[in-house]
Amino acid sequence: MMLKLWNMCLQVLKAPIYSYSSQTRAMSTQTQGTGNIVVYVTVPNKDAGKELANSIINSRLAACVNQVPGVESTYLWEGKVETDSEVLLIIKTRESLLESLTQHVIQNHKYDVPEVIALPIIGGNPSYIKWLEESTKAD
Image 1: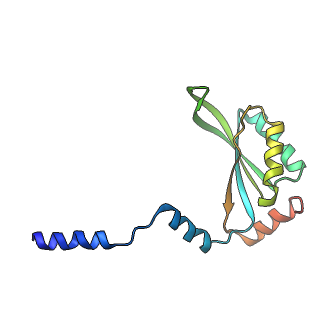
Image 2: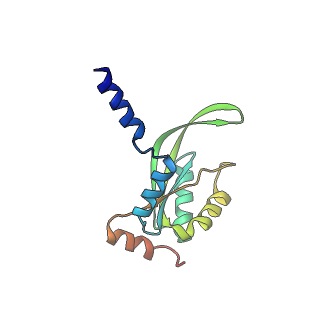
Image 3: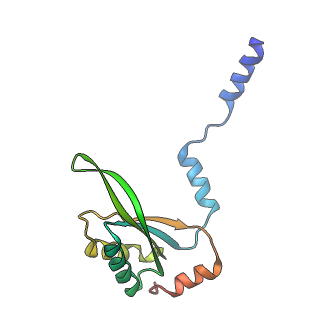
């Protein structure tokens, strides 16, 4: 019994070890992406969200902005843990517009340090992706 257990341990030790970075690299080569992104921005309330969403769409910096009310955010600010009710904006745009979108948010946001976080769109409804690209500024 002990010998069998010992052999199992040796097999585990001989198994390849995958680091987070090697798995991430492997995943990134398997998914090419669409060149489009989803951007998260939080705002203090619905009015601020609607105002920012309209300015983003009118500037053609995004094809669509969803406003998700009732998000509760807990974060560290100036050394204290804070919790606030916010509205989450989910913004669909081209990756090439991220810098312009980020600057627009910074200039038009109520917060000193607004959240702007981008995630790649790796696939989806081809018709929606086409519409997204047609509804935003050209590169």
